[in-house]
Every structure is written in C-alpha cells, then in structure tokens.
Length: 194
Image (cartoon, rainbow, N blue to C red; front, side, top):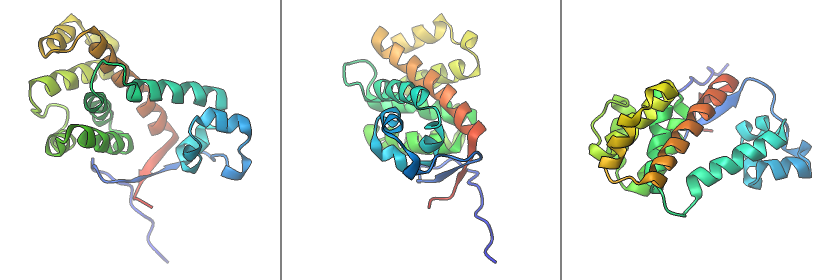
C-alpha cells in the first residue's frame, strides 16, 4: 500500500497541484455553455475550474475579471507588480497554491526571483525595496479588511511613483485574490505536483 501524498505546507515557486473537496464536472460533461464560462478551453484540464463550472455564468464573470486585472496591457501597474500584489495577498491568507502560481508569474515578469522567494519565505514583512514594500503593504491592508487600507497606503504608493491607474490595479489585484484565496481555501487543498 502506498502512502498518501502529503499536502504541501510551505510556500514555494514550484508547481503544485490542487484537489477539490466537492466533485467537479468531468471534462466529458462540459457543454458549449460551460466552455463559454471557462473563457479559455485549456482550463477544462483544471479541477478548480471544472468545479467552478457547475455555475458557468459566475465562472465566466470571474474569469473575465481575472483576465482583465492581470492581462490588460493598457497602462497602469506593470504585470510583475500586479502578480506581486496577488502573491502578497495569497501569502498573507495562507493560500499555498495561489501563492505558488502568482509567485512564478511575479518572478518571470520582474526577473526578481530572489525577492519573490524572500516574500514567500519571510512573509509579507520581508524587505523587498521601497516600491515593492508599498505594494505589499497595500495588499496586506486590503486583505485584513478594507478599513485597514487608508489614504496613508495611497500616499505611500504615490510616493513610489504609482499613478491613480496603477494604484487601482494594485487594489484590483489584491481584492480579487483576497476573494479567490478564500474560495480556493474553502473548496479544496494543495497537493504535490502531479
């Protein structure tokens, strides 16, 4: 008898898996409406998205918001720092799976792998330099409760060169992942890479 795989319990930039606690749809069960909800057909290979596909209308709205926040090239916060905000939020919330995904993106887009790893290893209090510290602090304030995000966070972000559009992107990435982490953490658990 083989021993069951252990749930990952450290933050990592390595690829890991995720297993749902409720039954996802089978890929063979997906209809045209489900594929519309997935937005990207390749997501039909993900147990997370197959679980969310039970409600394709909500999944479609969720996926379009996600793609606009992270992939919109129309100015605002650079992609690396949008991913940093998602990583900091996920690290603060304890979502090992989301932190791993967005840490890889933050590393890829910033070329600052060691700093991203420091965030994962040391937590959101790690010193990542003034600008990244400001983005991380804003993400943590929003994650704790929106009331903790104040004009002091806005002023700190502005002092690091973020304009209103970039600040809105930082807020959107953090707020979206605060919600996404809670959804993922309540629906399943991280697993070793398959």
